[in-house]
Length: 166
Figure 1 (cartoon, rainbow, N blue to C red):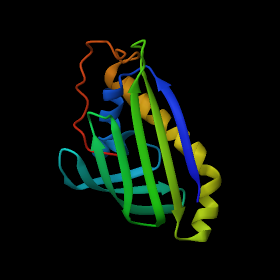
Figure 2: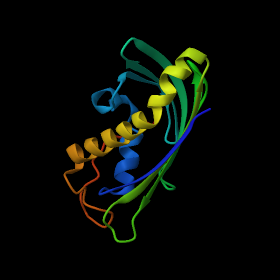
Figure 3: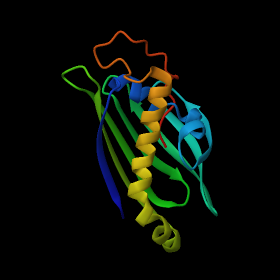
């Protein structure tokens, strides 16, 4: 049961990064290996979302229950259905005290139902997580500009509306 935890400091406001992570419907535009996304249902603090992940000959669909709290800047995801025995994601976002960005913490815990799939994916998963976080940072630069305005900036936060991480 691999657990991957990462902390990353980025030059964007916590709310900007929260908006990107919760914008699931746009994941196929920028996330590596994400080939499709569909929001089944959504409210202000919850969504059910499907993702299709493809890598070489592997193509898997899974459904997640995503809970998000804008005030606390947190996103918690749990598996509903798919190739995993279990899958949880936890995202936390905190503006830096100097106003020059935010810290992102991500915690992923997963196990595939298939032992073969687990053996294939497990050695690559930590690197895949790093690439995923890098993809969110690249998306932030494309939407908010190179510096993102930092936490104290008046740069607009016209990011996509909350949708969620899966």
